[in-house]
Each structure stands twice: as C-alpha cells, then as structure tokens.
Length: 288
Image (cartoon, rainbow, N blue to C red; front, side, top):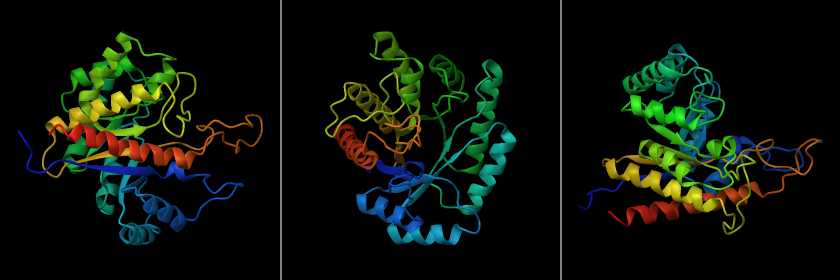
C-alpha cells in the first residue's frame, strides 16, 4: 500500500571528518566548514552539543546554512546519559543522538541491563538515541550485539559495519557472516558510512566505487534502509552520516612521521558516499 507521506533521508557530514581538510597543517575556520558542508549539498552536521559560549554562533550558522544537527555521546553509566540528555534538551535542536557506550568489558546480563536503562532514559527524554556498533564499546562484538537485540525489543542501532569487518579480518564475506549481519539490520535507525577491507578500518573505495568491498557495504546499507522504511511513520527521518575520519583513521604515506600525507582525497570520497546514500534511498523507496 502506498504511503501518504514517505519518510525522508538526511545526509549528515561528520564534524570530526572535517579535520585536516585544509592541508598543510592548517584547519578550516568554523564558518568555512559550515559553508563547505552546505555548498556540497549535505543536510546536516554530526558532531557535538556546542558549549554555552558557542551556542549563539552555532545556531546562527545552522540557521543561515539551513543545516540540521545530530550529536554523539559516550556514556559509561545511566548517570552519564542523564547528564547528557539534560544538556541536549536545554540546547533543543538535536535531530538524533548517536550513543557509543564506553564499557567494552561489560557483557551478558549486566550489559543488557545497562542498555535497557539507557534506552528508557532516551525514550523518556523524547530525543531519538541509537547505540552504535563500534569497536571498543559495549557493542564491539558482532555476536554479543545480536544477543542484545534479542533481549531488548526496543533497542535501535546506528549501523557502522566497518568495525566488525576490520575486527573480524573479513577479507571476504561468508554466508555465515552475512547471516549474522542481516540479524542486526532490522534494528537500523541510522548509518555511519565507512568501508573497511578487513585489514584497515577506512579505505578509499575509488572515484567510481571500484573497491570490491563496497558491494557488501552497499547491500547492507540498502537492507538497513529498507527495514527502517518498512516500519517508518509519517515525518520520520533516517540519518545517514558520512564519517571518514582524519589520520590515524585515514591511511597516510608517512606512518612514522607527522601522519598528514593521506593517500586518499577524503573530501571527494565523502561526496561520493553522500551521492551513494541518496541513490540507495531512491532505490529503496521506489518500491513503496
């Protein structure tokens, strides 16, 4: 049945990913970053809650350039989350919160209880919050994360599968691997885009997406968007964050030096992923 109002996609550019783009050891100014993001056609920025002294400037630039804002948080306890949510509500213009739960050695029922409490807190605050699949956090293990969603019906995820690909040294994707990953994708509420080759966390996929691993990430992103659209309501927003990090995430030619000479044009790759996200979104929604 045709939906009265299809859900919408927002492509956000990672503020972290804007680091080092000026070259020569220089950095773009605050407004130069806003201008570059807006002129490239992004819908928003994924970053942080501005400090109280910077709120006015950030609000002015977000309004002037017509950009949305999503933010990241790194709680270890429910109290950490309460404090962050209070700040988020006070600021008041956050599209969603991406949550990296910084307790990688908390497992089993203790992890389930922590995630359940964080989920309840975000629901009560009325701000969408999604737990990211990320190394060095509570979700660092693929099978462990599957067990969490099996225990928690309302837990929603930010899908960043580059972490599982590199942690599992997945040079190729077996049927077993695919089966496990597909178990996570029905819980997709946001996507962070980066491609791993199973050895490095972030690789250049080529100007036209020639890298062999991209086909797998494209399939997963397509599946995640489709699952989300199947249950989306009128006015819902699906965030796709282009998140290509600066060195040491980005591979450099001077590993034993100052690590500034990247082998990739990170900005051009970011634009490639932005266009790719919109193409996949169009393909998914052509079926509704």
